[in-house]
Length: 134
Image (cartoon, rainbow, N blue to C red):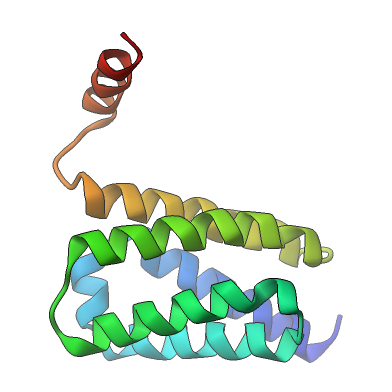
């Protein structure tokens, strides 16, 4: 396996790990900015026009977190779109990288849900889903 492939996998694992924690705490750590920057660079290195929106959204997310003011609507929207597009982008990944990309996409979607509905439990999510389908 290429060294670069291993580095991409390490970057994916780091991003997934950070997203599964408390986002507000994570965003305040200097390391989060570095994780986002490495992720942006990995996507740029792939040189795939299909990944352009991911790069744009990551840059916007990085700038938003860097501003120090957190708008949950902006963050939730970006994380949700990043999650959906990351899952779609998994088709471009090979070998052990593909499941990592898929896990990252799922972590992004969960993080978006956490930001948009911070106090809801799984039980409340089910109740909300049932109310909406009625």
